[in-house]
Image 1: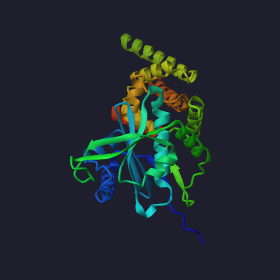
Image 2 (image 1 turned 120 degrees about the vertical axis):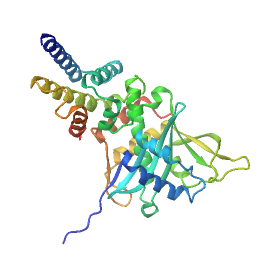
Image 3 (image 1 turned 120 degrees about the horizontal axis):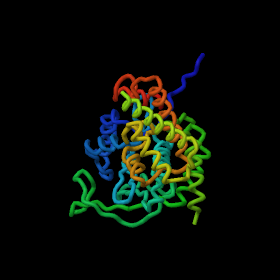
Length: 216
Length: 119
């Protein structure tokens, strides 16, 4: 008797044809969580057109999502949402690692004195451990005018913490990629859509970067 | 007729020269990466979007490469040069067969073929 093998979780940059699913997925979570910045349809569309929308899919269904917003000499990773039915598999962590690796090897932000950053709402505790484990460091407080669906102060602003991806994070990222064996925490299969590049290319690039940026 | 033949010969020569450069390029030479990318775009008549489709990177990323900023890490460049080399060979073969250098389906057809070949 053949055993049922579930389809792998595929990590990739999502194409434009995922916009509708990505928007529903994002809204489902942001509408019930006032600490997540709600993105408009045009923004999600633009992220996808620019291939700045990173996702995890399984059998044609989204399991996790995040985006990359490049502005003001900084690359912001944000909007991480994971389907609750696949929680605790480490998908969110791996998606951020996949995104970080992509930016570091294809855009070399540090060579241009650009930062990789993330913002976390004061009342959002969920991603803090993940951010710390990945090697982001606290930079300072940040305040922005925010949409009404978010938890805001009397002036209509949200306050949160700004984090910056640090050299220590690069070393952890490389260590993770070296030991990646094609599975998630629970043994589920995970594949990366890397186009014409290979995992070895990524490992070589990150290895050289760890030499270029040694641990302080 | 003579002018067309001369133009084709000159084009063939440019394609061949660029193909040779992609085969022996120093991956750490940022300026050469930038120059080859610009020439490949011109000779292959491809856009930033075409390149981003092939390498699954963002359009702004390719745009920065083209502008000489935020270049890919040297360890990531070999597959890019290999692809350019393959596309130049494909175009040269088309030229030598006397067909359209853009393939049988016009511009859209060529792009479709190109992305399909890259998969």
